[in-house]
Image 1 (cartoon, helix red, strand yellow):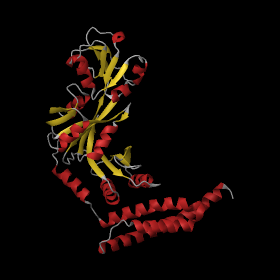
Image 2: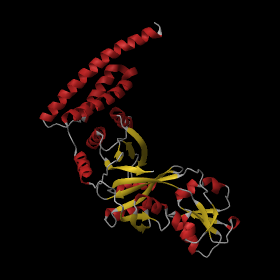
Image 3: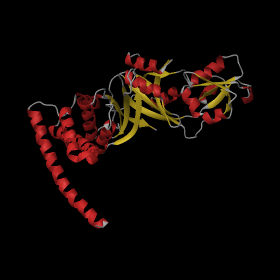
Image 4: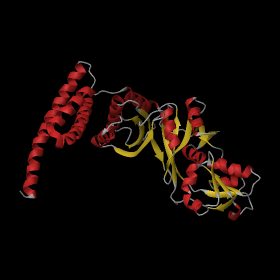
Length: 380
């Protein structure tokens, strides 16, 4: 048989399959109605395991694993269809809708905002981009910022979450799994680290450089050209600048924002020593309560996915089935556990899209350790 004849056979088989899939989905709808009438859960894991084992056995050794993958997707789609027909809404969906209705139509221009570091930190720059007139409280660590929001010492907190050069700020993701909070907005700011030192100092005088580990990573090419200079990590780029300013030494420098030069009366030995000119850091603005402002088109969630083959694939298949765009996927080890991971997702979809509500409702129902961080817009 030539390729045309073989493809003709495939077309004929597909017609039969589609007819059977329609029949299966219609039967799934009847099962969903039965579950509703008898107050049974939509998701029945024991039934799914029996189904997968049976169809894999029917397919035989050669095609068993392929059939299991196919049916895992089919059952996810069937379950989603059942929920849609039954109109089930989870507590989370109701909470999201209530936040949409209750949140002010305009993002606030001010408020008490927690930032990590000291005056001149990039978090301050991000805060001033998010708010016209913020009242900033500075804290020593990222965890202190989360705690200040959690204890309602500050209404908002601003934290870096990822950089275009150095990647994700892992500490933030670990803290996101620990605290209860919501993301209300995000912002991207361009980062251009400068090398700052005491006035009168020369680059040839410098023996040590201080900065945050992310900034150090973002300036790796410059630092590799000066391997004789010792690099020291500190909690913030602005803290590094203040440390240099308050020191009696003239042989130390800081990788910090250009604005810290004037702020701490330091000299700029080198402008923009980042590896890439287009170096951006993304910051999130968090709050204790859920606030969803008009125009929100990004949603962030985190979940624990079962540690077994195909688990992540099945989650990804749901995004595809609902036509939702996955903009970011990040995994982090779950603290205190062996070989368990928390997965962080950014979804690009309007808060008004019914598919978004459908997805979060399904995931909340089906998975342990599911966390909804919020729906928000991002300032570029």
